[in-house]
Structures are given as C-alpha cells and as structure tokens.
Length: 312
Image 1 (cartoon, rainbow, N blue to C red):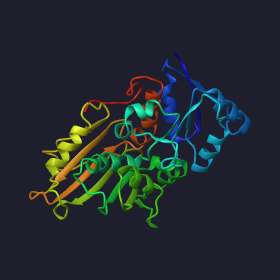
Image 2 (image 1 turned 90 degrees about the horizontal axis):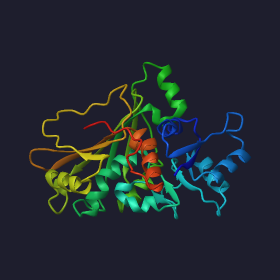
Image 3 (image 1 turned 180 degrees about the vertical axis):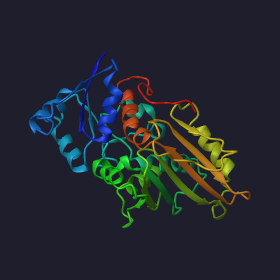
Image 4 (image 1 turned 30 degrees about the vertical axis):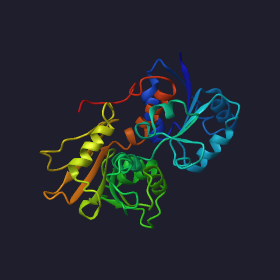
C-alpha cells in the first residue's frame, strides 16, 4: 500500500531532509506543490486534505494555521515538527521510546519533540519514572548544537562569518523548549536551560549535571546507567554507552547525518557527582529522523525504515 504525504514547509532545512529520506521509498508518494503554489493557501488546503499524512515544517503560528486548514472530516493524519503543539491537549508527543510505539502508531495528531528536549528527556524521564531521580529537583540543562537547527538565517550568519565561534542564547531563561521538558519528564519545577550554537553544521551535545550526593535513595552512576540500559533495551535508535575508557566527547564541524542517539553516564570516583550526556544529530533524531520514525509507525511500517543508522 502506498501512502500519500504532503510536507508543508518542504523548502526549510527539516522539510528538505524529510523529503530526501522519503523520495526513494516505495511506501510513500510525495504530494509536491510547485514554487508558484507553495505558499498559496488554496493549494495548500487542497494538498493538506488530500494527503494521508501531512508533515508540518513551519514556524509555530503557521503550523497552527495549517492545522486549521485541515477539514475535521478529512482522513489526513498530522505530524507537526514545530513547537506549536508539544504540550497541547489532543496531541500525542512523538517520542515513541517514551510514550510507547502503539500510542504514536494510533495517533491522528503527533507533535515532534524539540531537538534539545529529545536529549534531556531521553536521559531524565526514564530515571524519574523509575524513582531514581526526584521529580522536584532543580534540573539544569547545558547544551550545544550545530547551527543548522536555527534555520536559514542562522545558517547564513555562521557561514558568512568565519570568526563566529560560539553563540549562547535563551538568556531570558524562558526558552520555548522548557515547557515540554518539564511536562514530559513529569517534573515539579521548570529546568534551567542553557543552549548554545557552535560552528558545526549538525550534531548536538545535551548535558544534565547532577549532584547525586545531595539526593535521597543512593542514585549512583552505575544504577542510573543500568536503568537507562534496561529502559532502552532492544532499541535500534537509542543506545546507552559503557564509557569506561572515554576521556572526551567530540562534535565535528562536518559530521554525516545520523538518526541514532547515544546516552552517556559519567560519574566521579565517589559517585557523588554525575554528568548525563546525550549526543545526537539535531536534524536526525532531533528533527527529520524523528518525524520519519513517527511516520513509519503511523503507517504501520518498521520504525527504522529509511533512517540513517550507522553501526555503533
């Protein structure tokens, strides 16, 4: 069976990557508007309602407008790659490893997770659920990403200025990713989120430092690592590394696309401190790869079909 897919916003970085992943697949037929009709509301409305699946790669307000163009009686199922619906009622959070593959497979409306929250939630949510980490801890997230995550304007800025080495932002402490981190990890407090961009096109490192010695229940690094490994057992996309001989983690300037996510747990000799780190591709499991994974599940296919999964 062939499923029709319309990517609304296919000219952006995320949309282009999704289109590339789907273009050669026999299970999907892409509905494509020519350049003259790409922003025409009537043409978009027709495509949105004709498709079996619509993937929205748009700014938040435009994504909400696109959803409003879909007739409630339409068969169209939606994957929204924006942050417009990540904490909205009636939407399934598109992180199959956390919410369950069946939940995504059966959903009519799926909201793709943010790239930074993907790393944070992959580390923290399973440990909170297991009772190893407290729900009321004031968590901090430090993260760096490649500049492709900022869209065309930031890509042009970094590529035009060879001296631009580091950009930190979200300095008002009100970044739009914070609500989904809090909600989907089941936390009492919002996180302190410190994002930054470095001169690499893609890839990201998301870190959560922990003072384990100040927590109840003896949450040692080994126990955290074991719990994460148990939680992701059997996953072809998320892996938990041993890290016994690792002295550094690297983010290259020109890394190839990768839809995997690797989790790391580092601890000091006494076990009082830990650094939980997720490494992923902001355009892979952090965006386009996650959208394709969700689409596969919704279409009743192998969740890894069409993904870039280099051997670990």
